[in-house]
Amino acid sequence: MTRRWPDLSTLELLIGIDDHGSLSAASRLAHIAQPNASRAVKALERQLGMPLIHRRSTGATLTPQGTVIVHWARRVLDNSRQLLDVAEGMRTERSAELTVCASMTVAEHLIPAWLGSFRGLHPDVTVHLQVYNSTRVIEAIDAGTCDVGFIESPTAPRHLHSITVARDSLVVVVHPEHPWARRRKPLTAPELATTPLLVREPGSGTRTTLDLALQEYERAAPLLELGSSAAIRTSVLGGVGPAVLSTLAVNDQVKTGELRVVEVDGLVLDRTLRAVWRPPRQLEGPAGDLVKLVRMRSA
Image (cartoon, rainbow, N blue to C red):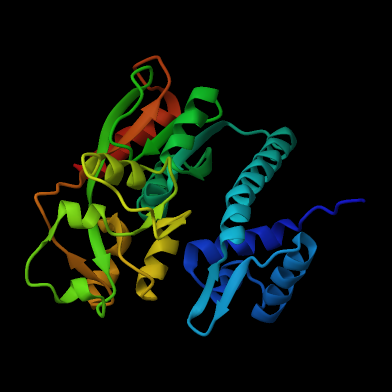
């Protein structure tokens, strides 16, 4: 039996659904009419022989099978982008290049402003951005495919150099109609630990920070594992369940009242965001310039 390759633009749509919680948002960002996007996803479901998304009036969410497919789709698209980057590099002379790897929370909420400022100061440098979870950022640094990485894990490997570039905190968030939103007393850490939560996949900085904070307690199995903070935020907004997310990811929704923050007694979820790179200790060239700029902005 001859197997057909999946269409890359359809894989991109699935990732968009995971990141933004709806087919309409994913199709809009991909510049595809929504009916065409819906047909493309249905065609991929027929090709793979499994349902990939739940279609609801409030939006679209991935099925368990769809979550697995999106995990691999991200890798396929990452490799495809690298192929195009290599081809472009062979076609065009470049005065300087910089490959940046960033964890998803950093990439979604901080990197755009950082790279915008960097491009203003260094318009001759071609910047390639690769977005992974924190564990995969470290793997890319180790493999030498990335000049500098930005991670949100509690620690960085000792064989790599790192420096603090920003700080944030994790908070428990729920839909306003969730019972926790009406609590008069803070949650306890054991209550949080024994509650099924919407969580990121293992290897993400957010998941690692939460797991370490609750490691002394018996833990409930996750309610759902999702590949991005945006997908988790959308699920909480839809009333699926509680989650622990970066303040960077939920500030806007908390301000509008769409999400409620639930205090947890005695649980500290502050964390450090770091730049990481391979030896030598002194980071030179465009990568060094970017880290200096980021630290100045944070200061």
